[in-house]
Structure formats: structure tokens, C-alpha cells
Length: 182
Image (cartoon, rainbow, N blue to C red; front, side):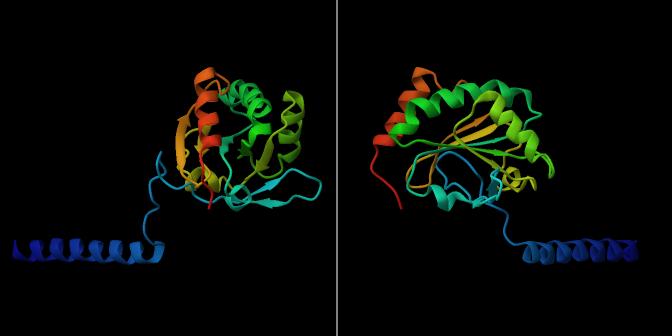
């Protein structure tokens, strides 16, 4: 019996050591992405002939709606027209709408066709690695984040919503009039 307890204690100790080492190798777990927290960075590219890298730094000091989506996502297709209407209404006042497609590598033309078919005029980026889903904890798409001028997430939506309702427009207009920026 003592021998069995010794083996169990050695196994538990060994597992503990492995967990400690793994944590040190991987680092601390990421901070929870939530309303009131800072927006994480991302890395995505434009869909231009010569793709350009974009990140949160490109939108610093602005009110931004970041949407994580894919062309194969039905709810994403449903909400995109209301995002376009919000962009048309508040883009001239300073709102930046940034939709990051997580379609796989090689689907750039599919994303371009989707954008053209819906007549979307806001920033469409592509992250075929899907890294933004992990970093932004977008466990399901669409996932959307309204970020204020200081880089703080002020609203988080998982699932499709109507982005041009009077309530949402008033909320975003309020952020646009706030002082802020980095």
C-alpha cells in the first residue's frame, strides 16, 4: 500500500511539474476579452492587388466596430447590410467599421466577390490563420466589438444583430462625441 501511495505521489508531483513548466513556456493565459477591457491587437491584410497589413494601430484614436466573420456564415450575411447602413450613417462622423474575414487561405476572391455582391464600403480585411478568433476570444462568429477612442471595448456582441437601430446608432454617436484617443 505504501508503495502504491508513493507511485501516486510521484505521478501527481510529476504532473504538477509538467504543468508549471508548460505554463512558463506558454506564458500567462490571455486576459479575458470583455466590455471594459482593452481591445487586443490583430494582424490581417487588405484584399487589394497588393495586400497591406493592418492592425489595431491603424485605427488608434478612433471609434471602431470590429467584426469577425466568414463568407460561409449565414448570420454574417444577414447582419452585413445593417453594418453598411451604419457605416454610411456614421462613417462621415468618424466611425470605422472593420470586418475581418476568417475564411481559409486561397479564398480571397470569394471574400472579394461577397463584398462586391453586398456593396460593402467599409474596411474588409482577411485573417486566414483565424488568429483573431483566438486572440479576441470570438468563440462563434459573427462576433463584434465596439471600441472607443481609448481602445476600450465598450460593447461586445456574439451573433448577428441589426447595427442600424436607433439604440445602436445613439450608442455609437455617443462614443464619437466623447473626448479620448491615445
